Length: 118
Image (tube, rainbow, N blue to C red; front, top):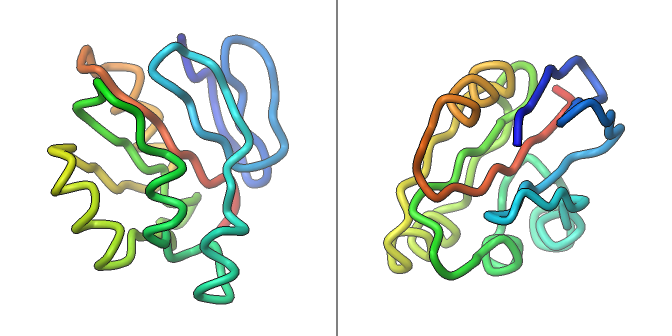
């Protein structure tokens, strides 16, 4: 599993381009991010809700890498942060270009949540 690149509005993973936010599972499966769970609560997908955090959770993960958008505008809510901490996950939040490097270089059991705009 290799994230090739990202630009405003898209991300390319193993040669396939996605024009929406994605979650990269432990298995390497790429899914569309369920950002509506956060939008319902906060009116924006720039704050990750506890409901979205629960949808991202997967047993066996040690690290969640959040690509916070090209300019780093996304962050977990306090409730989502507490949920991840309770589950024992380490969380890294970085602008998406930096998060891609972190994801590609990490050898931990990880999940990536990548926001592809702002």
